[in-house]
Length: 341
Image 1 (cartoon, rainbow, N blue to C red):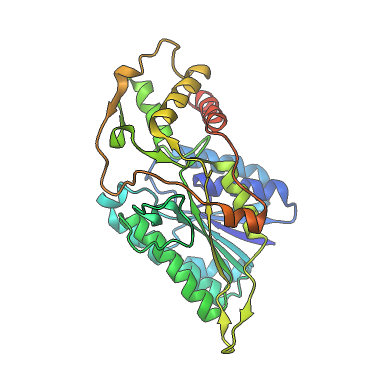
Image 2 (cartoon, rainbow, N blue to C red):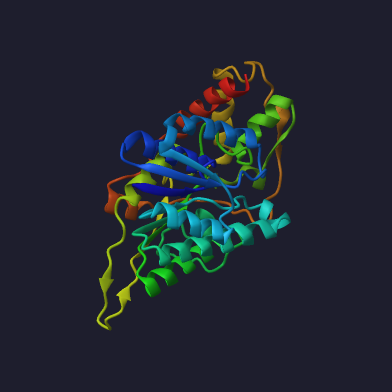
């Protein structure tokens, strides 16, 4: 059975592909990624190198999901029954300076995936949404029942658009689809644009780290293995196809939060990170952290808090992310020491 994973050289995509190949002997993963230079491509190459150990069970295609003929060709050749779309231009701040990348990948690319699912009888489309869709909602924790009509960044707007597009295709063509709103994913070999990774790079160079909103931010940090566990469980249970009283399909459509359900204050997060970086030998025990911290105002497009209500995920799949921030940052610090020496 061939499964499509787009964004396969990305942080979540590579971890998902590895989990599928390790756990399910009969699965072949076809991974697509354009290897964009949004961040250091050495990390993407490292992830692909790890996946290459699975031989012919992992097929890598370098390409862009905005390339419609390529996507059509892959669906034709491999007859996917399950597709997982994780390819996207990520990042809130980058969307302010490089909006074109978001329209190409997150809108046109996702449309191409939906069209391919429509014409090739895909039985389940799972796709990445984001906690960013909640914008500056005051009500916490964020529930998938909340209105999310006021995005505060183009990135968030594209992710909300993905959910709307998927709903339309589910309704019109009876395509089972599940959207997953990820909350601040972190872990080994992650994305350097994320705070924990960027802070580490800067501290190592002796640069100052900027802590936004003067440290009055809270984030629901979610360890990558918990995200992957959620995706794998969701993949195996497509929303049920049903017919309404009007004889038309009731959209087989679901959206879930995947977050730690436990927001951490940014200053506490920095404290734990510095302790684990010292413990792993990335930074010396006498490192002067206070001299390298700068409290600054909120950035455009950012939100003060992210906090996931994961009760629907628990009820439907018996799963709730559980990795503690300290445990996750310890694994990151140990990986960082090994990878960068």
